[in-house]
Length: 279
Image (cartoon, rainbow, N blue to C red; front, side, top):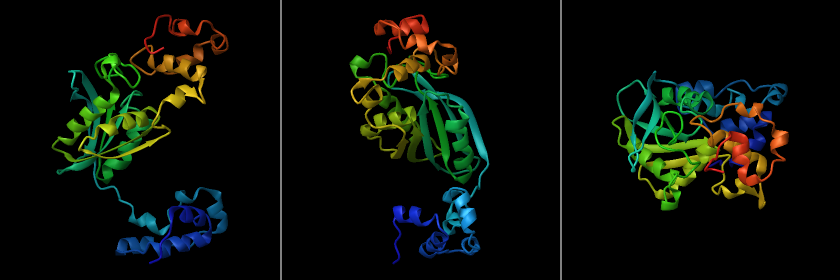
């Protein structure tokens, strides 16, 4: 059997020979796929003009799932009740068809209606047979409660965002349109919520795909043991002042002056004009 490692594939696919190699390793199995798997080889100039994965003439492209469903959208579904009684809000995109579907779930503070994080994913995956669900973290946008950046306000009692993620997974796994298989994805904050929820072992969670988010937040705050002042000042703007993410209000702050501000203990007051528990 002719096996091809991922590294070898990436290295070889940037050449004309790589196209032929991919075609030989992944043979077509249906007439539709067969037609897609025998393209004329692109010229070397074309291959070098853009990334290899942007080309539609590789053999495996025909094996990808194709859009089959229209999208049924439910906006601001405020039914996800957490263990402490706080209710979170979700946007739900799912196939407009009978049956059960696996769920792609995102837990985020950047607005569950974000085109970048949520809507674009829904437009791609829902027609291909997935339900996509985005949930506002507690205290942000349409979700109830108070937000405290990965933790609950009463974090000293052991309350943290992973518990909300677990409770949301349970709710999603029990819905009549769900197969009970849940995958999570997303970068940055969306990645951290995956790391915080996964160790709790919800039986409905099948996989997580975090990126741009190490499993330990310490290095984001104290990179190489040095406190990241600018990044954490921006966290005050994004997560310490309102139910939204602060938008572009940072454009109106005098960052040059603020970076020289002392004492650091009252930096939150210098930025927000009030005390911020996060700081």
